[in-house]
Image 1 (cartoon, rainbow, N blue to C red):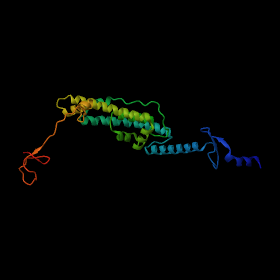
Image 2: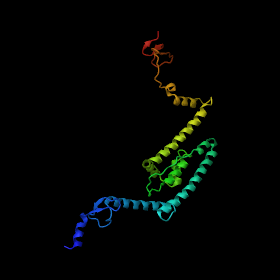
Image 3: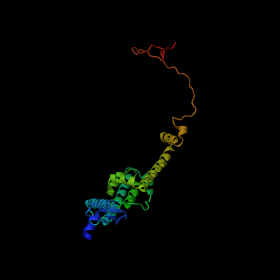
Image 4: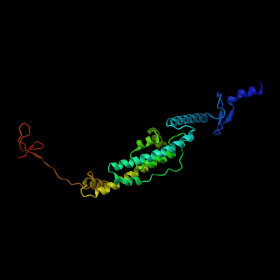
Amino acid sequence: MRKKEREALEAPTKVRYCAGCGAEYKLGDRKIHKDSCDRCHKERISAQTKRKHVHLRLQEKGFNGSVPEQISEYEAEVQLRADELLSAYVATMQQFGSQGNSTLLTLTPPELGPVDHDPNNEFTPFLKQIFLNLYVKMPRQVLLILEHLGISEKRFKLDMKKYDEFSKAVAACDRKHLELLEIVSFHNALNPKATSERIFLMKAGDPARYRESYKGDTFNMGQVNIQVNSNIRGLGIPKNTVAGGKSGK
């Protein structure tokens, strides 16, 4: 048997080293992609599929060219739309008499540091930072902001689970919103006429003292008899009868 024929027979079971991760593998029945193990081969195919999907999504938005260039162009366009959205939001607040909430517009967003990111994910760290810049000034407007960023709600929820730093940054914005509400509520409660809001804050500040379900000292008020007097016929309750069936006389 010739050397080439022998090598061809031994090739499927010969130990090889993956060009991607360096792991040992055997060729088996494969006819193509002979330089990588099965895992690296699958990851390569998956990455190619994702790049194709990103390319198609950006093409639908009117951006053409290679994927990195498209994403950079797309980010620049999104920044302009983000500025327009914030300006429209401020104008809406003023139209409905919310000029007093100008403090909201002074809130600063958390800054995302260097984070791990899938290069095939169109919700880039840059776009996440734009989201935070808008969200900290536009509470509870998640869907509206995502629409202007061109990001789906599903993509947002997936990244909230996958990227811990991003989810913590969103939660930090929510805490700032809550603190601002607490400040406004506190100043409103100082008005002597704002009884309900003042009682609410007192209960929140010292629940053991002001809540209805306080389990402090209790007093035995004894047995209470209720006497029912009725002159209406047909009720079936004799006149001057004490609740429980005993006569009131």
